[in-house]
Image (cartoon, rainbow, N blue to C red; front, top):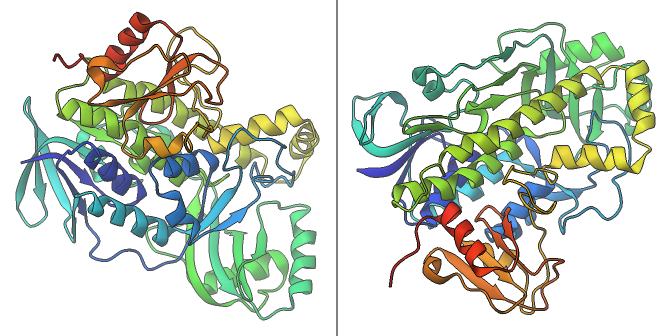
Length: 471
């Protein structure tokens, strides 16, 4: 019997498996595809996702395969520079091929002891008071204590669970891909600049050696179960630009719509949803993969505590309570960006407003997720927010979070993690770069308590990490 079975070995499922293995949870990941995807789509990891990767010691692996880009110009593709002094050590975007992200996260999970079975499609499941029985397409039945659907936008888990997925259907379609082109670069740049005066969602952006990242509106919404063809791209480019720029040799081709949907519940009993299984939205701002990765890190330590019998009664419920509003906000900002994708007075107004540093900073914070504040009750502004990677007397804060444990960072020298030392680390450092006497960090890097009173700290340790271990 497994502790947790996960359906889907994309970035969300793989990272969730790794997070669970940090706490010795027995994990099986089921992936219906026999081989990783062959298409080479480049995605962007945002600031908060980069911070999470640094917290788990994964960032250097990713940086070796990616390309840093400025954060500016990601809201509705309005070309504005990033604000100065953003509150992160990783104030950049990392462009990286999605198959590389998938591979590195899957390797990380298996290195930690997760089992991944490819070519295993889930056909159904039943849950009871003790666990979940998962049936595979071949008839094999597996048993686990919890089951998590990370199986994408068309999630079979969500459908069988009967969770509503309300929202708006797709109204518009866009083609996206990476292709080479024979037209001279200057000619392409001039034509793209001309078209973007009226159609900001159109672009051919240089990428690699004589390659271009191509985004072109499609004529109509069609069946997205099949990828588009090279001829589809040529036809749409000729319709909009009057030329197909001699595009050829595609690295990958895809289409996407602007459907926007959000699962009504992230948990039903012992079955949970994460990533695209819980939310879909247009790719404006490149937030989809990042949202799923952040779901996984929020859920992992909580589900592990539940499995190990250490979770406070309502801890697992905070997964929906915290992440559902975050997804709602992402859906809203992508809707807004879609409305701003065509030229007109609204886009011109936003372009002017983004000249104000406060507006630009606010929008960047929304898209990169560094502005999230969970509701932990009344307290200082830092309560419920992520903490940047601060300097310690020895090393950096994020280096202390590789094991996925909680952490008390104490500048007073008087506090202790006491009976929670088996799951919470204590760093006593009067020189820590903080403006508060002490704080409690959850394993996902959010500040759960600020103060200097031991009894108050003990109450919050119990709230997030369960009963103290008696000695």
